[in-house]
Length: 166
Image 1 (cartoon, one colour):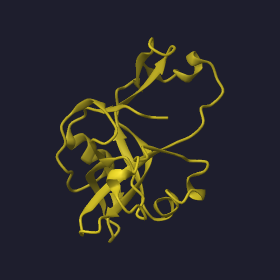
Image 2 (cartoon, rainbow, N blue to C red):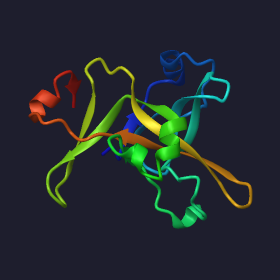
Image 3 (cartoon, rainbow, N blue to C red):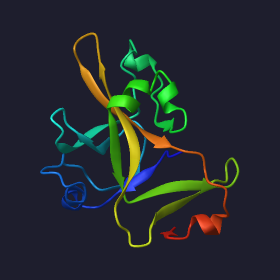
């Protein structure tokens, strides 16, 4: 599960990586948390690439009151297409979430220690994601997203870190 990540690369580097004409302005952040505005790469209705800021925490289109719904920050890739909350987004609104690192924690309750994981060359990468537009009864719109996750591979910690640096 991904619950914190970073994006500190300049907007121009992100724009180049995704080959987009423009990018919504975003500040560099080392500790991006759920419910914050996050950058996603997606296709617009005409098929052109775009980089947009949306809220991290997917709200399905069928939710009546967004204030009473616990947002969904992650979706299991293995089951997302079967879940009503993600089915439409999985079929029609996939996206990429630019990042230059993410956090994993070790230790027990009260003693957890964060570890920052990034590529050795500090290059940008992207998480797979799903986006959704929630429409309120008053006509308001909230663009949201969730990160697709998968079960951890069975390997040692050292093997998992090959090619990465903490």
